[in-house]
Length: 112
Length: 113
Image 1 (spheres, rainbow over the protein chains, first blue to last red):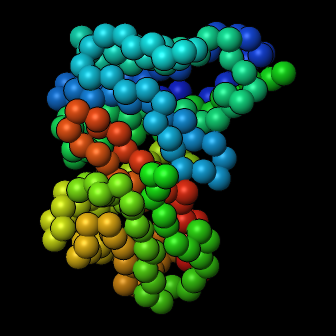
Image 2: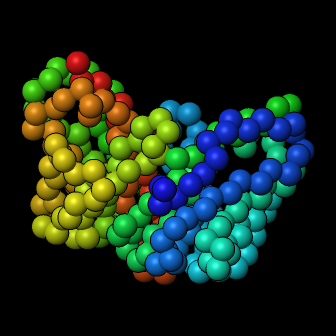
């Protein structure tokens, strides 16, 4: 079993849809949870960052962490074609990035 | 502007010919890291550095070397590249502490023939 599992997609949705992206993990030591967005031919850029369990909202994006279930989610409301990208979940045990682990990424296409 | 700069962006080489990919950051970050990205496997950490002269292995260090002689630079060295090192490489630097944000370079696409 991989340390971090993520549905690779591709996922296609119509513009305006609510998108749910998910990751599961096995290492209970993870405390820092992140979502990165990666456009084609670009490096990943941080989208959301959460420490420990709970929810965090930023505009159209909401990140949820459930440490008891070892499950994290990213919700995108009112999705736009510009949201079309690969979304990577990431997590680490320490706050200096040691043992940083990424999911394989989910490719999302938002169709106009 | 906060930047992580990698060079070159694209590189085609042959088996066994030593190469270096440079990485530089302008954010005065102590922590830097190298990743490779392969289809279906995601980003895997090769090496990381907590500070000048402090480096450690990540998950896939075999066949790679790094050095950290200055805070801003963290080059990745392939002494004898092999075809299985064909991949997309990313350098990253991290602010650490309360702001645990990792900034990535634009990537280096390497092909080893």
